[in-house]
Image (cartoon, rainbow, N blue to C red; front, side, top):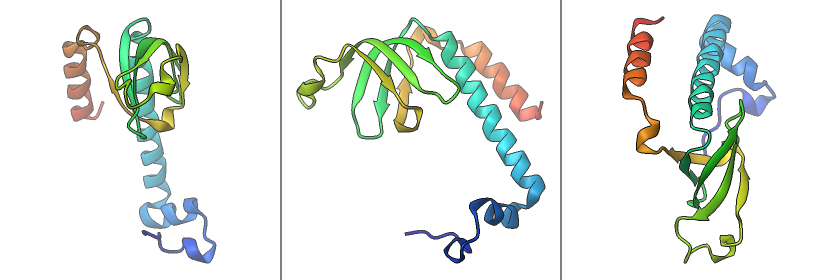
Length: 130
């Protein structure tokens, strides 16, 4: 078990984080996290209507048509089917589902859903710090 210093004495997580990286570091880190989430959100919005496979943290993998995604990366799938039907027979009757973003491990994208040129450009911009 990993316990962050100070948390056992009633110090809030924000106070502990600021003591480690300072107020500026905290703002930069939160800004970076927000940018990354926005990047994924805008990318997934372009995949609406395409077939994706979502692997959950409990090892359940569900394939379906991406209906919608929100800013928390919650995913709604339609026409779903389970990848390993023998292991999850109770999921055979599920045709539509809503998946909370925090339980997603991976999202497998269709090959035509990846525009390599856009990814290269985004990587170059990130490397330049723009």
